Amino acid sequence: MAERIPSQFIDELLSRVDIVDIIDGRVPLKKAGKNLHACCPFHNEKTPSFTVSPDKQFYHCFGCGAHGTAIGFLMEYDQLSFPEAIQELADLAGMQIPVTQQAALLPARQNLYELMDKVSRYYVHQLQNHAQRQPFQEYIEQRGLTADTVAAFDIGMAPDGWDNVLRTFGTSQQRQEQLLEAGLLIKNEKGHNYDRFRQRLMFPIRDRRGRVIAFGGRVIDADGTPKYLNSPETPIFHKGQELYGLYQARKANRRLERIIIVEGYMDVIALAQFGITNAVATLGTATTQDHLRQLVRSAPEIVFCFDGDRAGKEAAWRAVENAMPILGGNFELKFMFLPEGQDPDSMIREQGVDSFSQLIRQAQSYSDFFFTTLLSRVDRQSMDGRARLVELTKPYLRQIPAGLYRDMLEQQLAEHTKTSLQMLSKHLDKPVTAIKPRPAQQSAMTPVRMAVMILLQYPQLSERVRDIEKLHTLDVPGLAIFIQLLEIMHQHPHLKTAQLLERWRDSQHAQSLEKLAAQPLNLSAEQLEHELVGIVEQLKKQARDERLAYLMSKPLSQLSEAEKLEVRSFK
View (tube, rainbow, N blue to C red):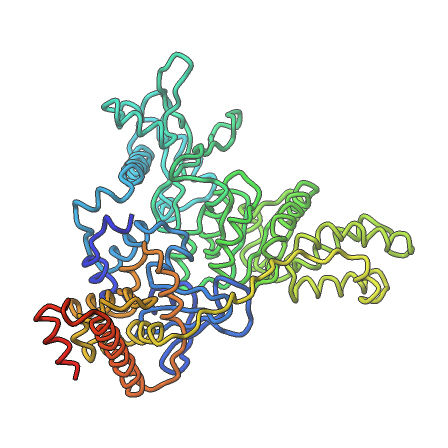
C-alpha cells in the first residue's frame, strides 16, 4: 500500500509532524540529554530504555529492539494499518492526502465510516424531532441523564418501523449493500432487507479515533427483548477489540492514570455525568486479551468493576484467566465489587461519588483476588488442602510469562502452603520461554555498513561525498544501498532519518536499515565526517585498483585507445 502514496507526500508529512508530540500524547516522555526517554510501551520494564530522538524523528528501545518513525509508532501502538497511520498524521498536520491516492486508502472502509456517521446523526435528529420521541425522552429523564450528557455521547433514537434507515439511506442497491455490510440492515429468507434497530435508544460506538463503527440499542419497554442489541461483526467493528467509552475517556483526560471497566453503556454514561470520566465497557463479551492490551497502553492501573453476587465473582474470575498471558508489565490490575443489587449507575446516584470512589480505592489487587478465590476452594489448615492448592494453582501459573511477577506469585504460593520456595519449585512446571536465537553472528561492522549507518543518522554529511560514479563497478555487499541512499540525499538534501527510512518501508532491507539507524554512534559529528570521507576514498581506491588490474590482465594489443589512455592515467 505504501507505494500508492507519493514518497514526496510522506516526506512533507513527516517534516510537519513531530514524533515527540505523537509519542508523548500516548507515552509520557522525559528529557534525557538531547533525546527523551520512557518505559517502553511494547514490553515490560521498570527502567526506561525507550528513547525518542527529535533530530532523527525516530524511536528505539534498547530493551526489546522496537524502533521506527512516527508512522511506525502509530501502526504498532494504535494498531493502525499503514494508510490509517498516514491519515491520522495527515489530519494532525492539516494536510490532504492526494485525491488520486486517497481513493486507494481502503475505499470500502472509508465509505462505511462516513455512512455510520450519517446514521448516527440521523438517530440523534430522531430523538430531538420524531413524533414518537416522548417515551424515549421520558426514559432518559427517568434515568437522570442531562441534556449535556446525552449530547456528549450522541445518544439517539431508532423509531418504530421496519424500514426507516432503509428508506432514508438505502436509495440504491449499492447503498443497501453498504447498509448490510455495516450491520444496519438484515436480509430475511425471502431476500428482503429491513432495519436491524427498531424502537430503541441508540448509543454510537466509537473507535480510538472517534469514528462511529457500530451501535448499541436499548429497549425502553420493560417487556422488550433483547434488552441490549449490538451491531454484528463488520469490516470496521470487532467487539472483542473495542471498548465503549474509551474514546470519550481519552478525550476527557490528557493523562489517564486509571481506567474502570464496567458492564454497560449506561454505567459509563452515568459515571461520566458525575465526573468519573475514566470508565469503559466491553460490548457484550468478557474482557479479552486484546481489550487488556489496549487498556494497559492507555493507563497504568485497570480496575474491573463487578456486582458482588456470584455471577459477578464468576465474571471476575474469567477476567483473571484472560489476563494471565499479559501479566508482569508496568501496570496493575485490580478488582472492585459493588454491594449486592447495585450497579455503578444506581450506586453513584444513591450513595454518591465519594462512596463509589472509596470502593475504587479499596479494590483488590490481582494477586489478592487470585489467591483469595483459590483458597476458598481448599482447607488451608490441613496439609492435604495446601497440597491441593498447589495443584489448583499450577495450570494458572503455567500461563503467566516468566519474570518477576510470576516469581512473586510463586513466593506467595509458598507462604500460603507453608513450604519453602525451593521445595515448591520442584513441583511447579517452569514456564515455556521463547528461545532466543544467538545473535546470529551479528553482521560485522564493515566499512560500507558503517558508511550507511553514518548517512542514515547524519544525512547532512551526504554533501561531503561526491563523484561516486566509479563505485558502481565494485561488487561489495551493501554498496548498492549506500549509493542509492546518496543519490536520494543529493536529490533531496532536506530529508531526515525518518523520511529516508520510510522510503525503504517496502524494501527487503527496511529492517536492517532501521537497526543501523538505531545503533549508537559514539563519535562526534566531526569524527563521523572524517570516517565517512575516509571510507568513500578507500572505496574509490579499491575501484581504481580493480579497474587497473582488469586492464593490465588484457594483452596490450587488445586494449582500445581509450583503455590505453586510461592505463596511463593511473600512473
